[in-house]
Length: 209
Ligand code: ATP
Ligand code: MG
Image (cartoon, rainbow, N blue to C red; front, side, top):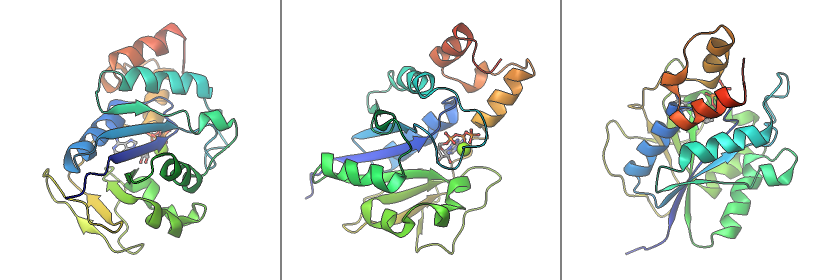
């Protein structure tokens, strides 16, 4: 029987982190019985240079506040420490080095998976970690990128020896940071989409207003 540690990774801009991120991570954690989920806020996301992004320090702080109540969740400084943009392939390589023998699962929404070919060295991602693709309503799953297994409903799944690709269509959380930022600028209520401490942090620091 294998006893290696299972670590799931959710990278993102987290501008701000919301309940969709937490619920998706929690679903992956129970499905694959992972020991830890590492949330990795990006320093400067390569594909989001055009709009003004909130300081990495604020984005990191919100992730730290949001993850603290969950035993298995961790907040990783690996990308913000770099103080320059890091590609996912570099982050996964570093995490493999830092956690010898661990099994890595990289979580990604169907929206990001649609453009995975544009990611640096994307084929290598499939060697470095299991890929767990979670459904994002409105973004169809791309079937033509790599062989995959569909996990139709909540259940416990055993990981194969070799890295594999899984698609979880039953994740249905229509929440996005873009909508939260836009709603808040319009003065609409957004706290229902956010962990309570993140909402307090946003208010206290007058973010997105
Ligand atoms: P933005 O609107 O600014 O792009 P976002 O809500 O998409 O923000 P990101 O930080 O870009 O959040 O997302 C990080 C990761 O989490 C991505 O892989 C994304 O697909 C996934 N993700 C974000 N929101 C959800 C959700 N509601 N359900 C499932 N996955 C999600
Ligand atoms: Mg996004």
